Each structure stands twice: as C-alpha cells, then as structure tokens.
Image (cartoon, rainbow, N blue to C red; front, side, top):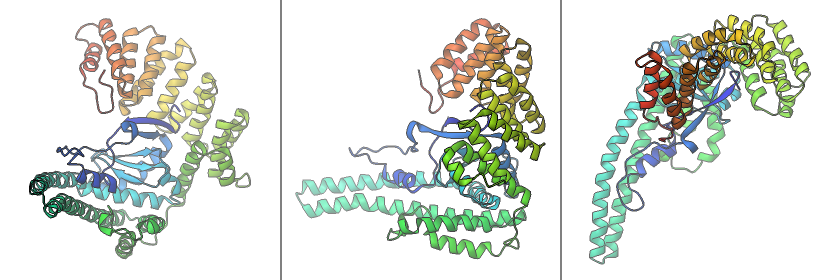
Length: 477
C-alpha cells in the first residue's frame, strides 16, 4: 500500500535477545566437521524483516516513546520505533537507534500504558549499553570456546591413540562441559540485562509521571502465557529470568512508583483504540472484523475498522460514506482524509484522491508518508500540470524519509512526465538500490551518468551508486 499501512521489507540482522540466538552463538564456534567457525548473527528467511509504515501509527509511537527517551538521556539520539508485521507479542532492539515492535504487541496491548511500558523496557536496554556489552561477552566467550575446543579435541585424540574408551569419554566431556558452562554464563548475563532493563524502565516512567503498571501487566500476561511451556525447563537455559520470579520482582519495584494507579488520558486512549482498529482493519479478514467490531458498536474505532474493511473488501461507495462519517466526527483528523484519498487512489481515481490528500498533508503538518501518497496521486493523474508540484512534494518527503523506495519511484515517474530523463534514471536507480536490487540500480546509474554533465550533482550521485558496494541483503551482481 502506498502510505497507509503498507509493508516495506528491509535487510536486517536478527534481534539479539532470544534464547536461540544466544545458544547458537555459544555453540557454533565448532562446526560438525570440527573446524573453528566465526560467530555470525542469525537471520530470518531471506535475511529481511517485513516493516509496516503508517503515518498515524508512527506518530502515536513517537508520542509514546519521546518522553521516555528524554528521561533516559537519549532524546537527541534520533531513536525511532519500527513496526514489524508479525502477529506475535514481541519488541526488541538491534542497535542504538531503533526499537522494533510487532503489530501483534500493538494489537494485544489494551492501553497506551502497556505499549509505553514495553518501550520503556527496551529503552532500558539502550540506555544500559546492553548491545555493546553483549557483544563483548560473546567475543570473550568465543575466545574461551576456541581454547576449550582445542583442549577437548586434544583429549579425544589422546584417548583414541591409547585405545582407551575411558580416556575418549573424558575427551568428549572436555568438549561438551565448557560449551555448557559458557552458554550458561552468557544466558545468566543476559538475564541480568533483562532485570536491569525492567528497573530502568520503571525509573524512566516515574521520571515522566507515568504509571509502570502497564509494563507489569504486559509481562504478567506474558508470564501466564509461557508458564506451562517453561515448566520443568532448567531456568539457566532461559534467556530471561523465570517468568514468575521476574514478574514478582517487577511488581515489587513498580509499586514503589507514586504513579502506579495513574490512568491514561482518555484522548490518548482513543488514539490507541483507533490505532488498533486500523491494524485490525488492514490485517484481519472481514468476518474477523465483523466479530470484533459488530455493526451495533457505534464507537469511532469500530467505525474506523469497518470503513477500512469495506473499502478493501466491499463497495467503494459504501466505504466512502463511512469515511465521510468519520471525517464529520473528527474534521481535523488528517488520517481520515488520508484514508479517503487512499481508497480513491487504489480504486483508480487519482484525480479525485488529490483533494483529501492535500487536506491530509495540511492537517498532518506535511507528514512525509502522506506527502508521498499525494505525490503518487498527482503523478497517477497523468496531468503534466501536476508534475512540478509532485516533484516538489516528493523531494520534500524524501528529505525526511531518504530510504523510502516508493518516494524515488514516484519521483522518477514525475521527472519522466516532464521529459527529464537524467533525473528520472537517477531516481529509478536510487529506488532500485534501496530495494536491494543492486544490479538494476547500477545499470540505471550508469545510464544516468551519460545524461548528466560530468561532475554535476546528479552525476556525482549516480557515480556513488555505480561505485557502491552491496549492502547486507543486496545482490552482488
């Protein structure tokens, strides 16, 4: 989808706080053939994460996270929250600038405070420098594992030469025991990080005058869900503390906050409910929406979800009437106008989509994702008179969203409308490069260089793409 809740796939390295990743890192120093192998991050299939982009949801998450980030001293670090299209309840950090949260977590969290609590916990990991510290622990473990492996292999070899089964068993024990000990050490260290992030998160929430109850509620629910699956498992092989122990400790500490019983602001709760309704409307089937938001429910979130489901699966005229009702209820809500524009654009009516999208851009104070959608409508209208406006709007959006392939794709088409083939090729090359299609990007950039004057800004940008090495996840061809 162009802007409103569309998926974007970006290269990534798997999150670092899972039991599988930690154990694999500790156990993969020796390959089955016996050779020493370097540690490498595991990746999901294809090495990519499905990213959901949506102006409304991202703005809400910024409003959730910014006070906490400022309290943690990270307000100037350009940290932003990234939404993963995954139905499981999860959130994690991979670097010092991004907090990832699943759509499943957003859909399951009933209050803003629950999401804010999760974000506060992840901020605790960032503020504590846990990623860097874990890398140091892994590097130290790698050295220990290599030495232990060399000694263990030597013992096995000695046992084999002496034809002593007992000596051979001792050698095998020398191989397995250090691995187990080092793995336990790594996971114990990681449990300490989780407890530290819990306590830091509570402190950040208290500093911002917010309740830590949502964090407790979330982790309590998670503990209840996993209690059966963790029963009987050695607690030392868990990447987090035993759920009940962790939740009990969190409850004691969280209740020391003077804001424990503070409720979410009703206006923020409404925005939260609208966000959940939007996710449901785009991601659930119509029959699921009908059950979750029956026609007898006249609340704004229910009407929002039904309008989205109707435009995606039903009659456009009925959907537009429902969206108009939403606009009448909240005439200054930019995202209702955005929804109307998107519904018209996807129905093949780009000219009719332009007015509501202009209004959405105005009310959202030039949200870049909505600007890109307006730019797409202007380009799709096939009116040469709109080409200059589309170029101006899209370039403005790309200043704030420089890694959005769809923005460059639409910009290339706008330049093409004007017959500006050099800039059209360059924008197309930038879009292909950001998609990970290095071969296509290089070919387009080479052609763009022939159209620009040597040494001009456009020529330099094209040359950068020609000379660029593939980023992780890109084809080297």
